[in-house]
Amino acid sequence: MASVQVDKQQDGGDAAGTASGEGEGYQRGLGARQIQMIAIGGAIGTGLFLGAGKAISKAGPSLILAYAVAGLVIFFIMRALGELLMYRPVSGSFSEYAREFVGPFAGFVTGWTYWLFWVVTGITEVTAAATYMTYWWNIPQWVSALIFTIILYGANLISVKLFGELEFWFSMVKVTAIIGMILICAGILTIGFSDAGDTASMTLLWSEGGFFPKGIGGTVMTLQIVMFAFLAVELVGVTAGESKDPKTTLPKAINTVPWRIAVFYVGALIMILSVVPWTHFQPGISPFVAAFEQMGLGVGAAIVNFVVLTAALSSCNSGMYSTGRMLRDLALNGQGPKVFTKLTRSGTPLVGTSFSAALMLVGVWINYQWPGDAFDKVVSFATISGMWAWIMILVAQIRYRAKADRGELPQSEFRAPGAPFTSWFALLFIFGVIVMMGVDAEARVSLYCAPLWALILGVSYLVLKRRNPEGAAFNR
Image 1 (cartoon, rainbow, N blue to C red):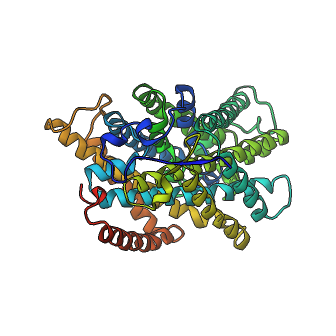
Image 2 (cartoon, rainbow, N blue to C red):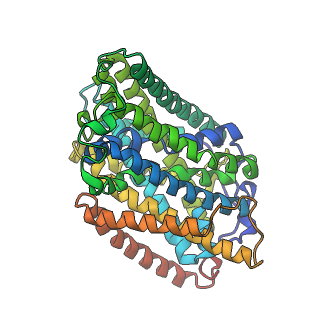
Image 3 (tube, helix red, strand yellow):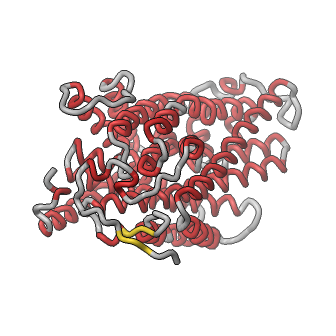
């Protein structure tokens, strides 16, 4: 086990003290190439590869429109985040900005909620990975989930540079696979090879019950699944404290959001649904795997299943990376146990990552108890907790822009176009999705859990503030 050093920065350090990776004790080991692929691959995971099967069965081809509209909102969120990152690139990211522009309690809630989001997402991802394993071997899902959790925890004990390299190649596999699938579908549409060649046509987008076969209401009700697919796109903000040149690499990574969504979500779904009728897709089955099976390309289906397996493991790996950093930011600000400030000699938050990985083992129990519907049980809660980070990003950016326009703070070098109006629009859209989650009986469980989580955080905050009433983290 690598020896551990304790960060010398005092709890409750000011903004200047956490303005850089070096100030936080981290090593700037992530280069432009790695940041770009982390940004591209961060949103390509379970939500697209597994969750899209359920969404297609609920909305049909109109799911394409849902991804396009939600993708525009995601771009507004990412540009808002980019404006904040160029103002002050810190590893604590959303928690730091919420703490500065909304208040100490908002920073406390955001940090712990984002940490919980990644723990729950980690459970989701190992659940998906365990599901993919049943394609080849009939082994209990909980066994696969346990093995994957242990392996990924071990991978997160390495240096951030090696983490970035691994994520680069994980993302490269995902990107290459989706582009390859799009090209194969394009070949089927133009040349007509494979079992689907005789029926493949763009008309499948509207000939099987219309573009809105379940009505506009059915499309709207899939927004919860669609937004879950985009969760983790903001992960690039967490890497700010460990990027070699954040002022250059982060804006470039954020500006790739539109074409990422256009190609990997909208483009991929257009091609798949033009080759295979939407009625052939089922919940719980990857649409990519199902598409290749319908084409009669069995080997291709096996390859895609391997790709989506690596995608799930990649997302879980990113989750372990994020949770350790978020816990350490909270600890540095006196809003979490001080033990989480400890770093290995290579600059990784060992204690925070270990604690998070231990909680991810809950996923093993979920897979043991409910192997058939484990994925659906955690998706909705992951969605609501992840969207809280987006809400705080938007609120913080609106308040920052107001202060910057008044001359109270320096202007960001990467201003969000159309803000604050685009930020307000994105906020309204997110609240609309939350309302839809309340209408959906399956997603409603997350709204029941949210008040309980808020109560836990409220009580915890009051206890910490009473113990340290003069602490900077509680009096900003």
